[in-house]
Length: 171
Image (cartoon, rainbow, N blue to C red):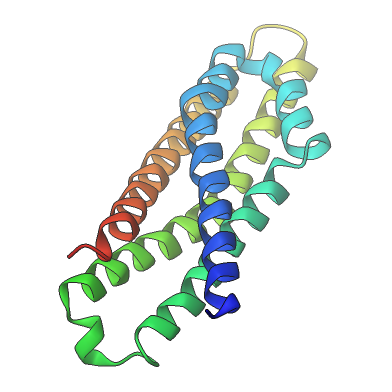
């Protein structure tokens, strides 16, 4: 019995559960809450992003998932053997892996920057003291829509990754 594959699979699956579960929580609960709070979301966003360190949580869990998966993929494919890659199981792992890498990029590059921009606009709206200007409202709604779209695409990619990984060994 080799210990390395067991450790890698444990890290890969455990971190993947944290990543996908956290992403679903963010998309279905936290993002709608931030949108509902409008300018008042600034404190909430600051708490989640800066004090609770959500970006670090997602960076660590997603990176461990992707690195663990890449090493397992390399090992299972015997160094990227094309016969293995083009087999039904290999294709499922390949599609799942590509989806996870794209989700990793979107989740770690696009989502945090969009959330921080949302927080900044919310801060500007609060600082204005009165009703928000049409420009600020327009920027807020555009950023909310952007965050929603990125989150939806990210969740779809992660769903593809999970389905690929869960089914590959049975194809």
